[in-house]
Image (cartoon, rainbow, N blue to C red):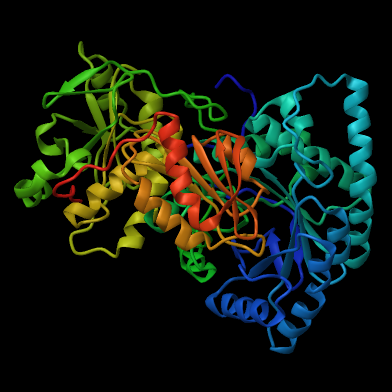
Length: 594
């Protein structure tokens, strides 16, 4: 590694990060507590009955902490009524107020709820996308201004026993941070640490951190860097971590993107509470979050040790592992070539009658015909024989080993020569019967997606899902979500909340129906401006709620069309894509099958 920072004791074994306990009402986060499940309601915060109904439904579904937006002091004041009615109904689930832009809303909300979420990027800042150089004195003046706004909330939370989340979002970094540190994981971490230092000045420690982004690579790097920086600051900076991929989207894509970001960090022992952000009814987030957390709530930490193996990659900065280019079954892989999708001979045979119609989603190489070499990466003799080979080989981890797949493939990458290419597998113990799709999807995305985000892997094979077509679809969707191989339109879609200015679910589906054939185009669908302009930087085009019933359209992070009636906005989005030369007509004829 180029960076001396270390974010976990070993990349080759599981050890859960030890933290202090933060209490949110009746619920403890970190310490010896299980990984907690969170969600956020979508009702208007002024509508007490609707909010109470949704909170109670989430509590009944197993949600342990519920967040509600409080966009102004007026909205925050109604939290008193919501909390009173929730408690009267017999629920003790802790309530969190989600604050953006309005310190006075935070001060009001802290009177009524158990936890306040603040976003350092906009708590005392209005984002103008200004480009300016800050002298050290000017930067210090900005920090003093933030202190004046933030310290009163810290003191109030300390006096009332409230918890806090210092939650950085990649899409809403302040101009000050952007100009000094850039739109980077480093900037995200610095933004949070500025607020944490102020809290600590008041001897206030009942807070957690988060580093959310819609891009799993950015999110993973930011959390790793945060934990490494906290460890470097000292033993008493052992604050718990809240995990989430923001704007993950809906359906299979949203679940895969969440599993890559959240699951890979949980596998490294990072994360004490999670929220899966889906553009669906909030109730659907709970089983996904529970399934992601469950393996690690029952996992035992290995004895802490620092592996003697030297990692072949920098975990704080993405770079694909450099290999030779191989030709396998007439297709090139490795180097800078496309990451290939493998299948078994059995599945190939099952799909043979329709492979010609499967377009971009077809199986590419049969694993039994590929000549892949399967080894135990702990077998020194097998590794030495491979590394003495005069030609580069395609290598994978042998089935049946008592190793977690992420650890196994990392070790393989550490011990074999860089020239050898690697075939990733989602499981080393493939099932023999039918599988439940969610139970196959989440581990596959966690394992393969995590390794791809580390730059490891030149081909992938999904076997945890036994249905031939579904296993292929899952493989391609993992590649897409990891940003490794873009084969369809990519969407960044936020979950609904009380700030949303239009129906996100139906609008997202309408936009998908109109644009889903635009291969490689990235479209962001945002309910409001909290993260909208910032996340636009990662998208080609953006569809953002500007006012009730009115839509603003973006190119990159620049708003170019304003106050478009919602009924016209999808057509106007298509016009905008056409203006910028990114539109093609949808293909006619028989649809591709997966």
